[in-house]
Length: 508
Image 1 (cartoon, one colour):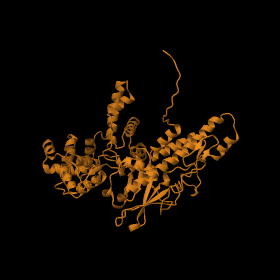
Image 2 (cartoon, rainbow, N blue to C red):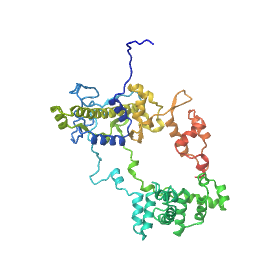
Image 3 (tube, helix red, strand yellow):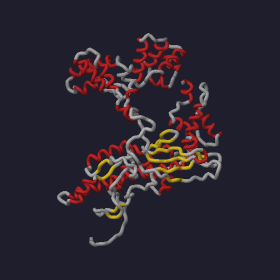
C-alpha cells in the first residue's frame, strides 16, 4: 500500500464554548437563569452585581463589556460591545386599524434597556407584602402537623413513629408507601424488629389521621374521602347521603369517576336518589388535604416580557418591554481587572481566562434578553388582534414564520419561547401559547387552533345543563361558523381544555 500526502480544503461548523454557553442560557427559564447567575457569581471572582441604581446605564446595567475591536487579550468584541442599543428596551405596536387600510407601524420608545433591578410596586407602601414574601412565610404541611403533635401525650416510641410518618407524607398529604415498606427501610434485616415497627406505625397512623386537615395520612383517594365523611358523621351533621357516600367510597373509585349511578346503586343497595345525593356530597370534599399547604412560591409565574396598552381608540398601541425585575445587573469587578492588567505574575494566564469568561457571560446574558425582546416584538406584531379582542381573534402562527422574519433558526425560536412568559392585558401566557396550527375554513382562509379551542370553550359554557353538546354537535356548530373541524379533532381540543365528555357534564 502506497502512502502519500494530499491537501484538502473543507468547511465545518464548530461550537465554541462561548456559543455553547449562549445556547444554554437562551433555553433557561427565569428561575434557572437566576440560579446560573448565582453560581457564576460564586465561582468567578471577576464577576459582581452592579448595585448602582442609576438609570443611565442601558441594558442589564452591564458595564466593562469587551470594547469594539481587539481587547487587551486579543479577542474581538462583537455582540453589543458597548451595551445594547438604547432603543432596544421597548417598542410600541400599533393596534389593528379596522377603519383604514389595516397598516401598522413599529414605533421605537426612548426608554432604557433594563432599568432598575429592584422590584417596584406601583401605588404600594413599604409595608405591603408581595406574593414571594407570603410564600416564604407559608407554613408547610409537615410543620402544621408537627405543631399539633406537640399537644399529644405520647411515649418516646410513638412520638418518633408519628414524626416519621409525618415526614413520609407527599405534598397532597397522602402516605404513598405501605407501613411494611417504611419499616423495612429502617430495619431491613431484623424481622422481629420490623414487626414491632409496623405495630408502632399502625398506632401512629391512627393518630396522624386524627389531625387537621381531615383526610391527611390516607393511603388512597377512597380512604381520604372516607375519613372526611366519618368526620362529618362524628360531628353530628350526617344525613342519609353520608352513609351512602361512605359505601360508595369503599367501591372501586372508577365507578365514582364515571358517575355510574346505576352500577353504584346496585353494589351499595341504595336508591338512585341517595346515590346522586351522595355523589353531590362527595364532590364537596377535599381530595388533596395538603393542597393549601403547598409552597405557593413554586406556582408564581414571573413574566419575562410586559405588554401594556398605550393610547386609546384609533391610536391604540401596545408597548413591549422586558421585565426589569428578572434582568440581572452584572459587571466585571474593576479592581480585580485593573490589578490583573497591572501585574503579570504566576497564574496570570489562568486569571485572564476567568476574566474573559466573566465578560462572555455578561455578553451572552445581554444577547439572551435581546433575542427574547426581538421574538416578543414579532409575536405581538403578528398577533395584534389577540391583544385587542382576545383569544378568539388569534391567528395561525408557526415557529418558521418568526424565524424567517428575524433571520434565526427555528430551534432558536423554540428555545426562546419555552418557559418564557409574557404579561398581557388578558393575563400571563407562555410565549408558545401564541403559536398554533391552522384549520381550513369555507372561505379558503385559515383559523388558529387556539381560537378554535376558545370557541369550543364558549360553546360548552353556554350549553344546556340537561342536554350538553356532544363532540359531533360541536363539530357541526364549528362548520356553521365556517371552520372545518372533525369530531376527533374536537375531542382532542376538548381533552386539552380539560372539559369532561357530554355524559359526565350532564351528571355534573
